[in-house]
Length: 162
Image 1: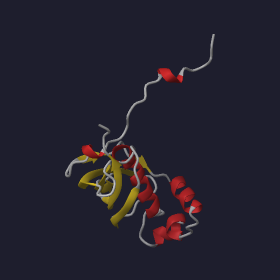
Image 2: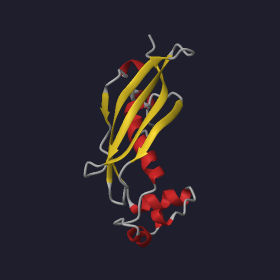
Image 3: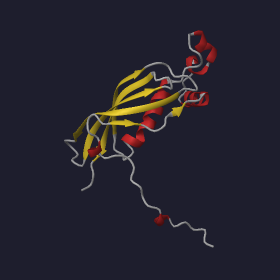
Image 4: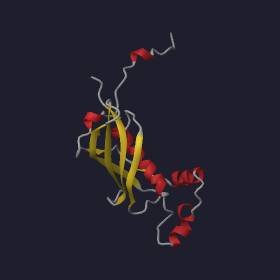
């Protein structure tokens, strides 16, 4: 019995979307979301050397009116961008920037974050005819429906090969 795997027998499945799929106003409800654990927050803060006690000390956060430590907002931003990749930028293309980043209610360990994005604009690239420039407005909410984050993100997106 052979234990070799025939990788050619596995079909390549296209993922993501091309420029033509991003018509202004189209909404994408991103997959099931992510519950952020206390360990995620501690690991992230440690990795980026952010020792703010609001993020790492539950008693400090409680003394300032929070029910628990506050999740580092940059972890929330990174998580939400990650939730959107499959729908918006998995095909690839350079990240061109973010604007209008607004953090809403604080996120605490145990909160589950979900996100959706709407195509804000899409135009052909003037300098790269095989691509377009797409901007999405993304909103993230916690399990109570409260907005925790909004922002706009712009990427260069490949057009379909014809």
